[in-house]
Image (spheres, rainbow over the protein chains, first blue to last red):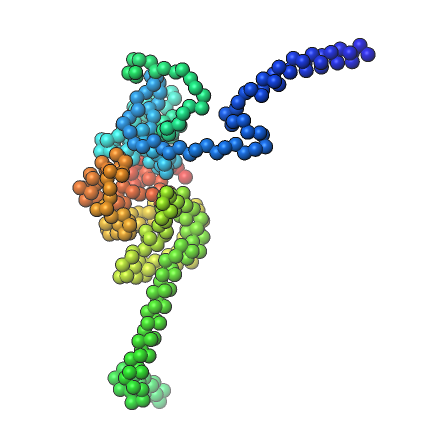
Length: 150
Length: 212
């Protein structure tokens, strides 16, 4: 008897505590919008790739440079890497492209290899092309002035 | 002895028969009816020949063999010549069969070699195809170099190119390339199919030797 009373009290208390949360949930707007869970949300507009542009300045020191051109259809696998046909050391001058950094030739033990290290071979793991899209979540990030003139 | 005589006689009369067939004028049919009939048969034969040859230029025909369907056709479906903004499609024969008649017939005769390899099963699994991919790709590349990428230029004429509408990279390299007398395939390899392992062809665009 005593035990069931304690249980009931605990249950009632937890319901009362959770009530404000339930009310607040109505005010929260998810990234998906306010459409009901069974309704289809509006399809986002498909953004075009940004047109070719000059190299994009970095926003922080360790940032992998962004890709200032579209890379649609570029193949990158163990048999061929399309990016290297312009950015490789034998090609960059003729192509007028940025040369791959020397850091990409070292494995994780800092042994410098004769070719690009397998861990740095898949370019799009770090270097990404751009679309003109607004950030989904706003932020107040400011680049450091030392590398990015405002 | 008798048999030999009969044989000689047979071949002798056969030769005479052929000579008569070609040289002896007919006394039975009028020249007009022979001309009309000959013309009609000619049109039927010629039309039928070209019709059959065009039938072998259709995508359905190309991918009726699984070597094409499961390998190169699947890869092509991911590329701009299959799926693009304007909906203009270049199918197999647009790139791989010349448009001009004399080159087309030569290509078709060369292609009969593929029938032999179909029977031999040279590339009847994706693994066998992959093992031969570089060799096969090189045949196509070398042909296109020899013909100055004739099949590309059936649609892509550099005199019609509007550089203002091209990306910066494309403008630079097109102007430079045309000045140097390069041909399309020199740069545009692997645009409609996956590239082979490029280590042998151009070691600077791949990480290293792929051990199978």
